[in-house]
Length: 154
Image 1 (cartoon, one colour):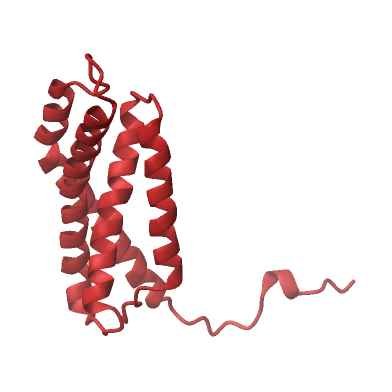
Image 2 (cartoon, helix red, strand yellow):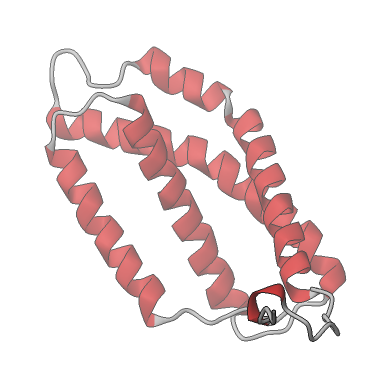
């Protein structure tokens, strides 16, 4: 499997995500799943862009894809926890309310769940690796009869 290089689409997505972050920072938003989703996207973009900058255009052997996807997913999962807390902290600092948008206890609870996020990310990476393997190794059909193309003669 050959990894793609960093292309225009990824760069434009990173810029669009930066715009979304700037808009989110200006809103009075205290919903936890919003910041968690943004943290997940941020951790994914950081790791995927790093990976494609380092290994883009190179061919990876099949035996390394599963372990690589497991490790990449685990790092993204743990990074989600760190990125989410970082975004919460930055938003608390940005707004500087007497009562923060995201309390310290909530941020510590998210950090405490980092191992579970890493496990979930690793399992997700494993699932993606298996789906890529199935996509690349589809059995070739030798059957020429297709039910949808047969005409009925009476």
